[in-house]
Length: 496
Image: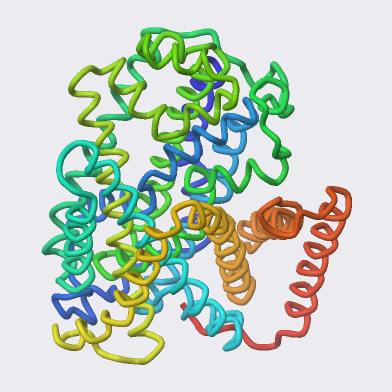
C-alpha cells in the first residue's frame, strides 16, 4: 500500500509543479477563444469550467483507466511507475499541449493539427486512421453494454437499438443538450465510486507487492502471463498513463472554453484525475491477484467453480469487468453494485457516443462543411452511422473475431499518442519553445508502438531481439529526422 500512497502524492505534486511547467512553456493568454469567436450554439458554445472538466474527464476515461489498470497490474508493481511517470511527463503533457493547440486553431481536430505541423500526407493518413478508430470504439461500446444490460433485463437487440439511438442524439444535437447535461452526472458517479473503493483500501490496508520488491514481470512468474513487460505494459495501460485517443476528444471541449487559462485544470488536470483512477484500480488488481483477494470477495459458488476447473488461469477466469463488479459488490454492497454497473455500462456508452460525434467533426473538417444546420449534421452523420452499423453487425456475428480486432485498437491509441507528441514537438520547436517537454515522450512512445507492432502475437510475432533492435533503430531515425528538419527549417510554423 505504500507504493499506492506515494504514487497518489506524486500525481498531486506533479499536477501542481509540472503542470505549471507545461503551462509556462505553452504560454496561455487572454485572446478570445473559439467558443466566443465562432459561437454557433451547436459545437461552439461556452460551458461552465467545472462542467467542461467533468465532460473531458469522462470523454478520455470511459473504462480505460479501470480495465487497463487492472490488466496492467498483472505485470506487477512496475505498473505504478508507468502510471505515475507516464501520466505526469507523458499523458498530461500530451493532453495539455494538444488541447491548447486545438484551442489556438479554432478547436480543430487531431488530423487537422497533424496536417498543419507534419504535412498534408500525414493529415490524410490520420483522417482515415482516426475515423476508423472512432467507429471501432463506437461499435464496440454498443454491443458490450448491451450484453451486460440484457443479462439484467430485456433483450440484447432492444438495448443495442436504445444505445444506438442515444448515440445518434449525442452525435447530432448541440453539445450542451445531451453531453453537457448527462456526462457530468456520470463523471461524478465514477469519481464517487473510485473514492469509495479507495476508502475501503485504506481501511483494509492489505499487504501488497511494492515497487521496491522488484520491477520484473510478476505475471509471468505467478499468473501465467505470456506477454513480455516491455512493450506490452505500456500498451495495456493506455488511458491511465498516455493515450492518443484523448487528443481526438479534447477538441470537443476546446470549442467550449471561455479562457485559455482554463487549459491546465481541464486538460492537464483531467489526465491527472484519470491517473488517480488508474492507481486505485491497479491497487485493487494487486490485492485481487497477488494477495489472494479473490478468495475474500468472491462468493463460495464462484470460488468452487474456479477451483474445480483447471483449464483457465486466474487472470483468464477473472477478467477485468468481473473484478470490477465483484469487488464493488463485495466492498460496497447494493450501492457498490450500482456504481459498478455505471462504470462498466454508462462509461463505455458515453465514450462510444463521443467517438461518433468526433467522427462527425473530423468528417466535417476534412470536407470543410458548416454544421449549423441539423439537416447537414444528419446527412454528414449517415455514412458514420452506416459504417458503425456494419461493424456492429459483423461483431454480433463474429464476437471472437472482433475481440482480436479490439487488441489493435489499444495499439492504435498509442500510435496516435506518438503522432500527437511529434505534432506538439514540432510546434514547440517551431515557436522556439522548450520542445524537450514533448520530445522525450514522443521518442519513448515511438519505441513502444514500433516494438509492440513487431513483437505482439496478434501482429507480426517477430523475435524479441529483432523487434527491440528494429524499434530502437526506428526511434533513432525519427530523432535524426527531427534534428535535420529543425536545422533546415528557416521559417516558424503557423503561429498559434
